[in-house]
Image (cartoon, rainbow, N blue to C red; front, side, top):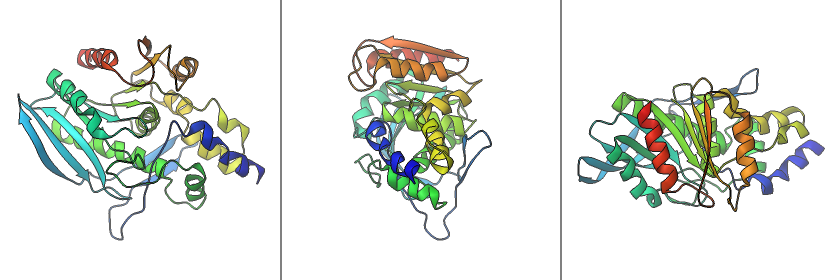
Length: 290
Protein backbone atom coordinates (compact mmCIF):
# COMPACT_ATOMS: atom_id res chain seq x y z
CA UNK A 1 0.00 0.00 0.00
CA UNK A 2 2.92 2.32 0.58
CA UNK A 3 3.72 2.25 -3.14
CA UNK A 4 0.11 3.07 -3.97
CA UNK A 5 0.00 5.99 -1.50
CA UNK A 6 3.31 7.31 -2.74
CA UNK A 7 2.12 7.04 -6.32
CA UNK A 8 -0.55 9.62 -5.63
CA UNK A 9 2.06 12.18 -4.56
CA UNK A 10 3.34 12.23 -8.14
CA UNK A 11 0.26 14.27 -9.07
CA UNK A 12 2.03 17.54 -8.30
CA UNK A 13 5.10 16.53 -10.30
CA UNK A 14 3.32 15.45 -13.46
CA UNK A 15 0.17 17.58 -13.47
CA UNK A 16 1.95 19.94 -15.89
CA UNK A 17 2.25 17.10 -18.39
CA UNK A 18 -0.97 15.00 -18.56
CA UNK A 19 -4.84 14.97 -18.68
CA UNK A 20 -7.65 12.65 -20.21
CA UNK A 21 -11.47 10.79 -20.01
CA UNK A 22 -14.02 8.08 -20.78
CA UNK A 23 -16.54 5.20 -20.80
CA UNK A 24 -18.24 3.61 -23.76
CA UNK A 25 -21.92 3.41 -24.60
CA UNK A 26 -23.41 -0.08 -24.91
CA UNK A 27 -23.07 -1.44 -28.42
CA UNK A 28 -20.45 1.13 -29.42
CA UNK A 29 -17.24 -0.08 -31.11
CA UNK A 30 -14.69 -0.96 -28.45
CA UNK A 31 -11.04 -0.05 -28.42
CA UNK A 32 -8.69 -2.14 -26.29
CA UNK A 33 -5.31 -1.75 -24.64
CA UNK A 34 -2.63 -3.98 -23.20
CA UNK A 35 0.90 -3.67 -21.93
CA UNK A 36 3.51 -5.59 -23.88
CA UNK A 37 6.15 -7.76 -22.25
CA UNK A 38 8.46 -4.75 -22.33
CA UNK A 39 5.81 -2.59 -20.62
CA UNK A 40 4.95 -0.62 -23.75
CA UNK A 41 1.38 0.58 -24.04
CA UNK A 42 -0.29 -1.05 -27.05
CA UNK A 43 -3.67 0.21 -28.20
CA UNK A 44 -6.13 -1.22 -30.67
CA UNK A 45 -8.24 1.70 -31.81
CA UNK A 46 -11.53 1.64 -33.70
CA UNK A 47 -12.32 2.87 -37.23
CA UNK A 48 -12.88 6.63 -37.17
CA UNK A 49 -16.47 7.82 -37.04
CA UNK A 50 -17.06 11.56 -37.09
CA UNK A 51 -19.12 14.48 -38.26
CA UNK A 52 -17.50 17.41 -40.02
CA UNK A 53 -18.66 21.00 -40.38
CA UNK A 54 -16.85 23.33 -42.77
CA UNK A 55 -16.08 26.65 -41.09
CA UNK A 56 -14.22 28.41 -43.89
CA UNK A 57 -13.00 27.82 -47.43
CA UNK A 58 -10.51 30.25 -48.92
CA UNK A 59 -7.23 30.21 -50.79
CA UNK A 60 -7.47 26.49 -51.44
CA UNK A 61 -7.65 25.73 -47.70
CA UNK A 62 -10.64 24.28 -45.88
CA UNK A 63 -11.04 24.74 -42.14
CA UNK A 64 -13.42 22.28 -40.47
CA UNK A 65 -14.70 21.41 -37.04
CA UNK A 66 -14.70 17.66 -36.47
CA UNK A 67 -16.50 15.74 -33.74
CA UNK A 68 -15.17 12.20 -33.38
CA UNK A 69 -17.64 9.63 -32.00
CA UNK A 70 -14.90 7.88 -30.06
CA UNK A 71 -15.17 5.22 -27.35
CA UNK A 72 -15.36 7.05 -24.05
CA UNK A 73 -17.25 10.04 -25.43
CA UNK A 74 -17.13 12.63 -28.22
CA UNK A 75 -13.87 14.39 -29.03
CA UNK A 76 -13.66 17.76 -30.73
CA UNK A 77 -10.95 18.73 -33.22
CA UNK A 78 -10.06 21.49 -35.66
CA UNK A 79 -8.73 20.61 -39.12
CA UNK A 80 -7.11 22.90 -41.68
CA UNK A 81 -6.14 21.23 -44.94
CA UNK A 82 -5.18 22.09 -48.51
CA UNK A 83 -6.81 20.26 -51.40
CA UNK A 84 -3.90 17.84 -51.86
CA UNK A 85 -1.66 17.74 -48.78
CA UNK A 86 1.72 16.03 -48.94
CA UNK A 87 1.69 15.16 -45.22
CA UNK A 88 -0.49 15.55 -42.14
CA UNK A 89 0.02 16.29 -38.45
CA UNK A 90 -2.04 15.38 -35.39
CA UNK A 91 -1.36 18.14 -32.86
CA UNK A 92 -2.25 18.22 -29.16
CA UNK A 93 -1.92 21.58 -27.36
CA UNK A 94 -0.74 22.26 -23.85
CA UNK A 95 -2.83 22.21 -20.68
CA UNK A 96 -5.71 24.67 -20.73
CA UNK A 97 -5.01 25.84 -24.29
CA UNK A 98 -8.07 25.76 -26.54
CA UNK A 99 -7.92 24.23 -30.00
CA UNK A 100 -9.17 27.49 -31.52
CA UNK A 101 -6.05 29.23 -30.20
CA UNK A 102 -4.12 27.26 -32.83
CA UNK A 103 -6.36 28.15 -35.80
CA UNK A 104 -3.83 30.52 -37.35
CA UNK A 105 -1.09 27.94 -36.84
CA UNK A 106 -3.22 25.25 -38.51
CA UNK A 107 -3.86 27.52 -41.50
CA UNK A 108 -0.14 28.28 -41.82
CA UNK A 109 0.70 24.58 -41.97
CA UNK A 110 -2.10 23.97 -44.46
CA UNK A 111 -0.76 26.76 -46.68
CA UNK A 112 2.59 24.95 -46.75
CA UNK A 113 0.93 21.73 -47.92
CA UNK A 114 0.45 19.99 -44.55
CA UNK A 115 -2.99 19.03 -43.23
CA UNK A 116 -3.07 20.06 -39.57
CA UNK A 117 -5.52 18.53 -37.08
CA UNK A 118 -5.69 20.05 -33.59
CA UNK A 119 -7.16 17.67 -31.02
CA UNK A 120 -9.05 19.15 -28.09
CA UNK A 121 -7.92 16.61 -25.47
CA UNK A 122 -10.19 15.28 -22.77
CA UNK A 123 -10.04 17.22 -19.53
CA UNK A 124 -8.41 20.28 -21.07
CA UNK A 125 -11.32 22.58 -20.25
CA UNK A 126 -12.52 23.18 -23.81
CA UNK A 127 -15.31 21.43 -25.78
CA UNK A 128 -14.30 17.81 -25.19
CA UNK A 129 -15.69 16.45 -21.89
CA UNK A 130 -13.32 15.04 -19.30
CA UNK A 131 -11.73 15.58 -15.92
CA UNK A 132 -8.55 17.47 -15.13
CA UNK A 133 -5.55 15.20 -14.75
CA UNK A 134 -6.15 12.98 -11.74
CA UNK A 135 -3.46 10.37 -11.23
CA UNK A 136 -5.30 8.67 -8.37
CA UNK A 137 -8.46 8.32 -10.47
CA UNK A 138 -6.60 7.05 -13.53
CA UNK A 139 -4.62 4.55 -11.48
CA UNK A 140 -7.80 3.28 -9.82
CA UNK A 141 -9.35 2.72 -13.25
CA UNK A 142 -6.21 0.90 -14.36
CA UNK A 143 -6.30 -1.35 -11.29
CA UNK A 144 -9.92 -2.22 -12.11
CA UNK A 145 -9.08 -3.14 -15.69
CA UNK A 146 -10.91 -0.07 -16.99
CA UNK A 147 -9.70 2.82 -19.14
CA UNK A 148 -7.51 5.49 -17.53
CA UNK A 149 -8.31 8.80 -19.17
CA UNK A 150 -4.74 9.23 -20.38
CA UNK A 151 -5.11 6.02 -22.41
CA UNK A 152 -8.30 7.46 -23.92
CA UNK A 153 -6.47 10.58 -25.10
CA UNK A 154 -3.78 8.44 -26.69
CA UNK A 155 -6.50 6.47 -28.47
CA UNK A 156 -8.08 9.71 -29.69
CA UNK A 157 -4.77 10.66 -31.31
CA UNK A 158 -4.56 7.29 -33.04
CA UNK A 159 -8.12 7.57 -34.38
CA UNK A 160 -7.32 11.05 -35.74
CA UNK A 161 -4.26 9.57 -37.44
CA UNK A 162 -6.44 6.89 -39.02
CA UNK A 163 -8.86 9.52 -40.31
CA UNK A 164 -6.12 11.61 -41.88
CA UNK A 165 -4.36 8.60 -43.38
CA UNK A 166 -7.55 7.24 -44.91
CA UNK A 167 -8.61 10.61 -46.26
CA UNK A 168 -5.34 11.82 -47.75
CA UNK A 169 -3.11 8.77 -48.14
CA UNK A 170 -0.07 10.69 -46.85
CA UNK A 171 2.38 10.23 -43.96
CA UNK A 172 0.85 11.37 -40.66
CA UNK A 173 3.08 12.74 -37.89
CA UNK A 174 2.18 13.53 -34.27
CA UNK A 175 3.20 16.72 -32.52
CA UNK A 176 2.54 18.06 -29.05
CA UNK A 177 3.38 21.12 -27.03
CA UNK A 178 4.00 20.82 -23.27
CA UNK A 179 1.63 18.16 -21.85
CA UNK A 180 0.36 17.61 -25.40
CA UNK A 181 3.79 16.16 -26.11
CA UNK A 182 3.16 13.58 -23.37
CA UNK A 183 0.04 12.31 -25.12
CA UNK A 184 1.48 12.32 -28.61
CA UNK A 185 4.71 10.50 -27.76
CA UNK A 186 2.62 7.75 -26.17
CA UNK A 187 0.44 7.62 -29.29
CA UNK A 188 3.39 7.29 -31.66
CA UNK A 189 4.97 4.60 -29.49
CA UNK A 190 1.66 2.70 -29.37
CA UNK A 191 0.79 3.08 -33.07
CA UNK A 192 3.49 2.22 -35.57
CA UNK A 193 1.52 3.80 -38.42
CA UNK A 194 2.50 7.26 -37.23
CA UNK A 195 5.38 8.52 -39.37
CA UNK A 196 7.26 10.24 -36.54
CA UNK A 197 7.03 12.53 -33.51
CA UNK A 198 7.67 16.22 -32.79
CA UNK A 199 7.81 17.20 -29.11
CA UNK A 200 7.98 20.82 -27.96
CA UNK A 201 8.66 21.95 -24.39
CA UNK A 202 7.89 18.54 -22.93
CA UNK A 203 9.62 15.92 -20.81
CA UNK A 204 9.36 12.54 -19.16
CA UNK A 205 9.05 11.50 -15.53
CA UNK A 206 12.70 10.99 -14.72
CA UNK A 207 12.50 7.27 -13.99
CA UNK A 208 9.65 7.68 -11.47
CA UNK A 209 8.35 4.15 -12.12
CA UNK A 210 11.54 2.66 -10.67
CA UNK A 211 10.45 3.84 -7.21
CA UNK A 212 7.48 1.45 -7.24
CA UNK A 213 6.56 -2.18 -7.65
CA UNK A 214 3.69 -4.15 -9.13
CA UNK A 215 0.76 -2.32 -10.71
CA UNK A 216 2.07 1.07 -9.62
CA UNK A 217 5.31 0.53 -11.49
CA UNK A 218 3.59 -0.82 -14.60
CA UNK A 219 1.12 2.05 -14.81
CA UNK A 220 3.66 4.84 -14.35
CA UNK A 221 6.00 3.22 -16.87
CA UNK A 222 3.19 2.91 -19.40
CA UNK A 223 2.59 6.68 -19.44
CA UNK A 224 6.20 7.88 -19.07
CA UNK A 225 7.42 9.75 -22.18
CA UNK A 226 11.04 8.92 -21.24
CA UNK A 227 10.20 5.25 -21.79
CA UNK A 228 7.80 5.63 -24.71
CA UNK A 229 10.16 7.72 -26.81
CA UNK A 230 12.60 4.81 -27.05
CA UNK A 231 9.98 2.72 -28.87
CA UNK A 232 9.53 5.14 -31.78
CA UNK A 233 12.65 4.10 -33.72
CA UNK A 234 13.18 3.69 -36.69
CA UNK A 235 10.78 6.59 -37.18
CA UNK A 236 12.20 10.08 -36.57
CA UNK A 237 12.05 11.92 -33.25
CA UNK A 238 12.45 15.69 -33.04
CA UNK A 239 12.64 17.46 -29.68
CA UNK A 240 12.50 21.26 -29.34
CA UNK A 241 13.16 23.00 -26.03
CA UNK A 242 13.98 26.56 -25.02
CA UNK A 243 16.94 27.17 -22.74
CA UNK A 244 14.83 29.76 -20.92
CA UNK A 245 11.79 27.50 -20.44
CA UNK A 246 10.02 28.69 -17.30
CA UNK A 247 7.84 25.58 -16.80
CA UNK A 248 9.81 22.48 -17.77
CA UNK A 249 13.59 22.74 -17.34
CA UNK A 250 15.76 22.58 -20.42
CA UNK A 251 17.64 19.69 -18.81
CA UNK A 252 14.40 17.67 -18.64
CA UNK A 253 13.82 18.15 -22.35
CA UNK A 254 17.38 17.07 -23.05
CA UNK A 255 16.91 14.00 -20.83
CA UNK A 256 13.85 13.02 -22.87
CA UNK A 257 15.86 13.38 -26.06
CA UNK A 258 18.64 11.21 -24.63
CA UNK A 259 16.13 8.38 -24.10
CA UNK A 260 15.17 8.47 -27.79
CA UNK A 261 16.95 6.31 -30.32
CA UNK A 262 18.13 7.25 -33.79
CA UNK A 263 17.04 8.87 -36.00
CA UNK A 264 16.59 11.85 -33.72
CA UNK A 265 17.40 15.54 -33.45
CA UNK A 266 17.35 18.14 -30.68
CA UNK A 267 16.94 21.87 -31.25
CA UNK A 268 17.19 24.66 -28.68
CA UNK A 269 14.85 27.45 -29.76
CA UNK A 270 14.41 31.05 -28.70
CA UNK A 271 11.60 31.81 -26.28
CA UNK A 272 10.32 30.29 -23.06
CA UNK A 273 7.64 27.58 -22.85
CA UNK A 274 5.53 26.20 -25.66
CA UNK A 275 5.42 26.12 -29.44
CA UNK A 276 6.11 29.32 -31.36
CA UNK A 277 6.63 30.53 -34.93
CA UNK A 278 10.33 29.60 -34.91
CA UNK A 279 9.48 25.99 -34.08
CA UNK A 280 6.68 25.98 -36.67
CA UNK A 281 9.09 26.99 -39.42
CA UNK A 282 11.52 24.22 -38.47
CA UNK A 283 8.81 21.57 -38.25
CA UNK A 284 7.27 22.49 -41.60
CA UNK A 285 10.67 22.45 -43.31
CA UNK A 286 11.46 19.08 -41.74
CA UNK A 287 8.15 17.43 -42.64
CA UNK A 288 8.33 18.68 -46.21
CA UNK A 289 11.79 17.13 -46.72
CA UNK A 290 10.65 13.58 -45.88
